[in-house]
Image (cartoon, rainbow, N blue to C red; front, top):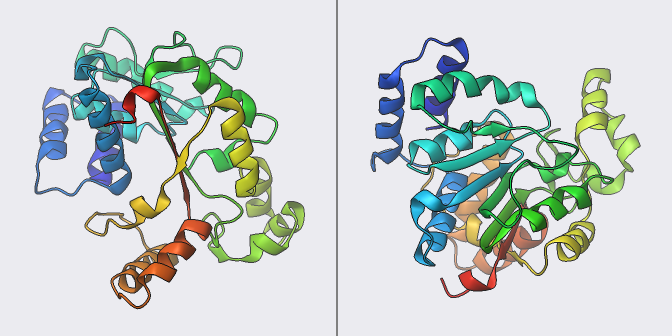
Length: 288
């Protein structure tokens, strides 16, 4: 499914796109024989909770807080959500989609927006669903409170916030494809283990912190939350479209979890040392 969305995105960027391309994508994401990637599944489950609480689907306002190239925004639009916005500091990845996408879908508001004086240009207390996937590890320490406090400003009384991200506690560091090394070396020394180009990228883009630091920032800026990565880890009937060591580790995990002798211990290790899943639910959503 990710490849279909990617191909549609490229057509939008090129300008060589028509309504049939959009209709094909809409049909594809709704086809029950096509597997929806896990993170998309989680978003749909969250949105279903919001809808069950009494917010109409067409009224649900959604923010992808660190949308990258905009694939998730395109998926949610194709799935039928109307008020979907994406924002990213690397605006060249998403803003060029706006013109052709707005013309194609006859949109009154463009889906991709940009910061204005470090603020998300959306009204306070108006967003029902805020999420990010593999974003917080790229947010510098001096900016993390601003990033999260903006979400506090934006969240509606009926709101769910979900962030999926690795921390320094995670045993596998996916950006460098290494295991454990980032536990033992200070950031500058760890980055220096790699070639000049990779070292520069890591210095500018990767800011892993320990769990305890993220927990303090979340509680300070958003409030109490749940860490639900074990729930996410139990789904094995999805298409991750992964390769290499990450795919190998994931499949090994599922095999060990399927064994009653190792299931409990492996899940405990996963909870402590795998990608984090921080979920905040407003009081109105707790019963759904």
